[in-house]
Image (cartoon, rainbow, N blue to C red):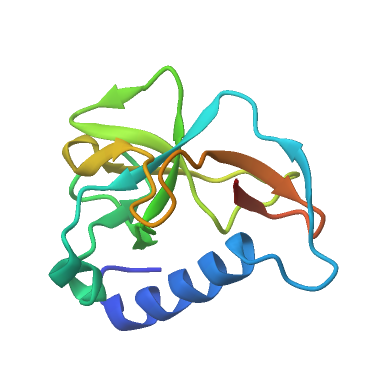
Length: 138
């Protein structure tokens, strides 16, 4: 997707994120994604209500790189962290197990995963039974 289609990018990101994270009928976590951990965006409640304020997920660690879409609130980030030009390496939620897609998000907007509604919960990046990347929270 290009930088010229932010609305379409936002819609597709939320659609992919919803499918990847949701425990849809018949979709289950099947294997952990090794070398990655859940991170979350450093965003306050007002920014969460405004998808246009979400940082982009880029195809390369450069502000001029093509945009894959907007970064979801929970990001699958490489561990140990790999930061290039101020961008952290991530796994795009639109990735499939047989074709993982690397995305890059500004490292300054990422925090360790912590649930505000379920303190003590954990998050694990996982391959889902539909072949897509997702996250499993407990």
